[in-house]
Length: 169
Image (cartoon, rainbow, N blue to C red; front, side):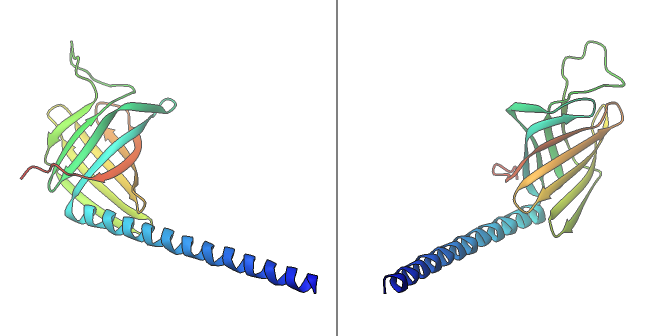
């Protein structure tokens, strides 16, 4: 009799654990679907702020960034304020303003969608350089930005995407 009660009690405890696990799985799946819908809306509206957290220069290891460096895509305009680590093929004499900085309208913006997220391709003609940017965004909100330029080595950044809140009219 004692064994039957022990087996019954074990069965009840295990069934409660399985039910709780299924509930957590359903909650997590609902959160993931909501985040994917939010990302899709940001991409559709072109209202994106990429916040770089790690820089990956072509010639070396990763550099964790302590300041907030961003790429903002608002409609048909792009504003970048990103650091640069690497080899510059040409540079102006006495130049003290390094990094990747521009506030321009891209020549083109192409958005590709797959099951893992979105890829945004764009080309920006800045006053002193031509940048090709590829922003890969996952459905979870993580992103990788690859920047190619005529005058510098390529560099990539890892970070997150947020909705651009202070969008200019």
